[in-house]
Amino acid sequence: MQHRVHDVETLCQYINPTADELAAIEATKAVFRWNITPYYARLMDQDDPNCPIRKQVVPRLDELEPDLVGVVDPLEEVAHSPVKNLIHNYRDRVAFCVTSECAIYCRYCLRKRMVGDADFMMRRAEHQAAIDYIAAHPEIRDVLLTGGDPLTFNEAHLDWLLSRLRAIPHVEVIRLGTRMPVKLPFRITDDLCALLQQYHPIWVNTHFNHPKELTDDAAEGLDRLLRAGVPIGNQTVLLRGINDDAETLRTLSQGLVRLRVRPYYLYQAQLIGGTAHLRTSIEKGMELMEALQGTTTGFAIPKYVLDTPYGKVPLTRSYVQGRAGDHVIMKTPRGTRWAEPNPLPNGEARTLHLPSLPLPDGIATIPTGSDTFVPFAVEREVF
Image (cartoon, rainbow, N blue to C red; front, side, top):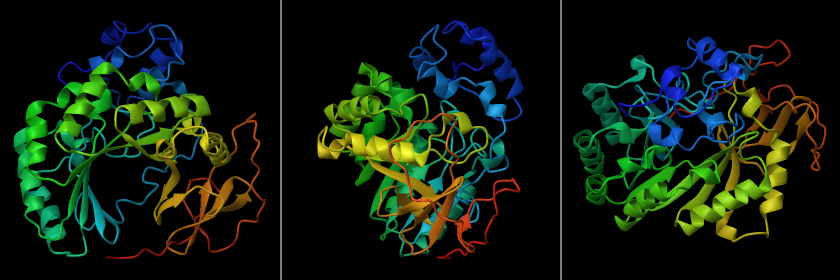
C-alpha cells in the first residue's frame, strides 16, 4: 500500500504509457485519482494499451468525453443512508461503507464520489453510530462491509468492528466485499484468516474481471480464506473491451470454479460519468449469457444483473421488457418499472433485438443532466 503507483515516473517502470494515457493522467486529476499496487501493475502488458488489466486502472482521455455527466450516485445510496455510509435499501440487509480507501482505484468504480475522499472516511464514533442503527433494527440479518475496501483496515480495527457486529443477536451473516485477492493477495494473511474464523459465519465477495487476474498469488490468498471456512463468491463487472466476449467470461468463470470460488453476479456497468467507453449495451450482456448457457458447468455461470435504486434486476427476458430509444425498460422485483439509460454503442453488432417501446410517463429513470432524458420522481421505501 505504501508503494502504490501514482506518478508517471513510477508507472514507466511497469509500462510504456501512450500519449493518451499521459495526457489523461494530467487531465483527470481533478475528476478521479489513480492508484495501482505494484503487484497489480506487474500484471499489465508493458506495450499494449488495450491490455485488460491496464484499461481498468490507467486513466484514458475517453473519461473526459461527453457522457451522462452529473450521475455520481446512480443507486441513490446517499438517499438510502440513515447514518453516514450505511446504506439500507433492502429490508433485511445493509451495506456498510466502512472506509473510502482502496488499494487501487478502478476507473469504472461505482463509488467514485467517495473513494479516495477524506470526507467519507469514518471516525470510530461514526462507525459506532452505524452499529447502533443496526442494533436498533431487528429486521437486519445480513451486514455487508464494503467501501472502499474493508481489508485496508488492520486486524485490530477489523476485530473491533466484527466483534461489535457479532454481538448483535439478529445479525446472522457478515459479508466482506473486497478486491484484495485480486489487487493485493498478500493481504490475505494467516493472521487475517485466524481473525475471521472467530466471527463465523463470514462470507467474502471478491471481484475478478479477467482471467489474467487469476494468478498463483491470488490462488494462494483464496485458498487461505477457504481453509479458514470462508465461502467466496465473485462479482464481475461487464466491461467493454475487457471481458465482453463469451470466451473470456467462460475462461474466467471456469478458472474461478477451479479455485473453489463461485461466480455470483455479472454486473451491468453503472452509469457513472466518464465510463461510457467501458459500458456495453444490455442486449450485448444478454447475448453473452445466452452464449454461456449449456457450454459450461451450471454453477460456473453468474447471474447477469443491473443494480437500481429499486434493488437488483435480473437482466433476463422475464424482467427486460423492451427498448425505448436510448432506454431499456424493465420491471423490478419490487413491482415497479425502471428505464435504464443505455445507448447502443456505435457499430455494435447485435443478434438480440429487444421489442421497441415508447417511454411511458411515470416510469422511474436516472437523472442524467441531459435535456433528452426526463427524470421521473421515484418514491422510496423507508425502513
